[in-house]
Length: 131
Image (cartoon, rainbow, N blue to C red; front, side, top):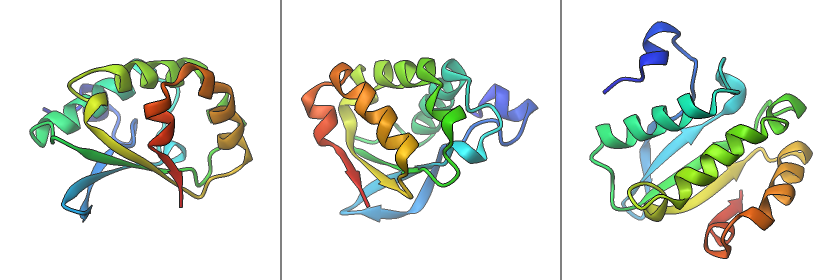
């Protein structure tokens, strides 16, 4: 099912499945700087759920997070981070998350992750890797 927000505003969210797989695990790509509604935590989570559902909620999935263009505006969206943490605590989506691969990491993203680390399970924290 397509994201209702993205139907009305193409490019509102950034979360798509890539053709590439890692060890037969599907990879999904996000670049917040490419999303016009990077501040919409509820919409982002809904969009992610819709995309994953469209692909049958894979038993495992990899999230490739591209921080190219990630600025202080993105880092200050603490509500979005909290919505994502709630998603990653869920059984249907979060427990299937194999890993998070961060590309083009910068100081803003690293600072945000440092602030969020105490709110993450150690299992989730161990899944985050910088490329």
